[in-house]
Structure formats: C-alpha cells, structure tokens
Amino acid sequence: MPRKLVVGNWKMNGSLAANEALLGAIHAQLGAGSAAVSVAVAPPLVYVPQVSQWLAAHGSALALAVQDVSNQSVGAYTGDVAAVMAAEFGVTYAIVGHSERRKYQAEDDARIAQKAVAAQAAGLTAIVCLGETLEQRDAGAALQVVHAQLAAVLKHVDLDLTRLVVAYEPVWAIGTGRTATPEQAQEIHAAIRAQLRAQSPQAAEQTPLLYGGSMNAGNAAELLAQADIDGGLIGGAALKAPDFMAIVQAAE
Ligand code: PEP
Image (cartoon, rainbow, N blue to C red; front, side):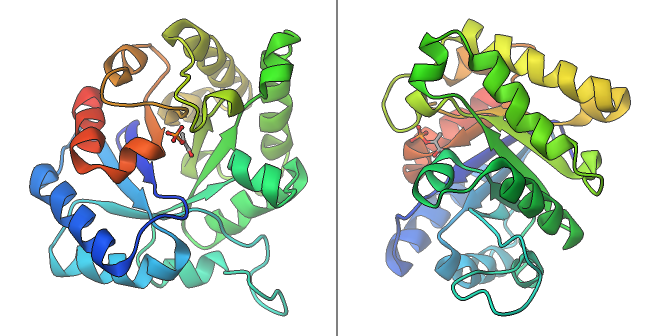
C-alpha cells in the first residue's frame, strides 16, 4: 500500500440515506482513485454492510474501515464485534484506541494493543490512535505520553509492523477546531517514526503516520507537507465530500 492514507471517521453520524449521498459524492470525485493515496471511510458499525455493498456495486476505489473492534475473536461479549466478522464485509482497516473510546469506554493501552493484534489476526490493518490531553501538553509531557502509548502496543509480541498505521491525534485538537501547528505535529510524528525505527528500520519507513485533530480543507496542505505526516484521520470534515476530497487532494 502507498504510505499516504486519508481515512474519514464518520463517528456516530449518518443514516442509510445520508450515507448513500455522501458515498456518491466522494465516489464522483475519487473516480478510479489515486495510485499515491489510499482513501477509506469508517462508518458506524451497523452501516458497514450498506457501505460494503455500495462500494462493491459501484466498483469504488474507496476502502472500508471500522471505528473499533473487539479484542476477542468469538464468544460471550455482548455488544462487541470481532475483527473476523468485519473482515467478512471487505473491511480493510480497524481504528483502535481512538481518544473517544479511551475516554467514554475506559479503554486502556493494554486493551488497545490486544485490539490491534486481533484486527491484524483477522487480516485487517490496525490504525492505532495516540495523543496527549491539553493538560499533558501544557505540562510538557506530550512526547512521553505518546511514546508510552505506542510502546504499549509495540511490546505486544504478536504485533505485525507491516500491517500497522499510527494516527497522532492530540485530544485537545479533536472536534475543537483547534489544530496542532505543522511544527507541533511533525515533532511528534518524527518521534513516532524514530520509535518505530528502533523496532524495525525497514517497517518504519513504510508505516503511514496520520495526523488527526480538526484537519480540514484549509489546513491540510500545510500539515501534509511535513516530512513525517503521511495522511489524515478526519472527523468533522469527512462528513462533507468537498472538504474530505480537498484533503485527499492535498495528500496527493
Ligand atoms: C477524529 O475523530 O479522529 C478527528 C480527528 O476528529 P476531527 O477531525 O473532527 O477533529
């Protein structure tokens, strides 16, 4: 896969009709896709069959992602969905460790590492989200926090570095309209790349490192111009096709 990747995280938004309209508008602009950038959307889980069928019916270049997966593969885990189940619907990526799940579902680093491994075991690529809170940044601890979050995933013996994407999403920038400056984001991305390099120099060069946090059509080009920013994990701006596609174009 190319190192460049743009993923639209629809979060808990959409409806059958709205999804169809959004997919149609993205597909109209994306066409046959781009060799340089992979593009994916992550609808709410209940809409995965709808989006999967729509993409297949239209021969779309868009890939499909899920916003979360279970750390388990089967069994009595009410409400959970296993990565193998998502894989049956042509899902390529599984986002794990999004800060909204860390916050509202109390997911910790160990659970997130298990989810990344479970996603990979089902043949998916895990998009692992990392990021510091505003208090942690103000305390000068951003680099240490992100390092520790990534270390918790990398120490898992079963982790496959060739099917890993890392998304740096400062919590204070998600859905707030406040974006990290390109320099702030690049500093963290370079540190993430160095941490990956220490584990596998070869894999580190291939691993897409995404920035997420109020990325939009206006600020994407500057962020994506940074050496270690390979793409974006997009929330709000992913719900409007022109904005989302402007970010995809900026990544090309
Ligand atoms: C996200 O939820 O991953 C995200 C980056 O959201 P937003 O773009 O709305 O800040």
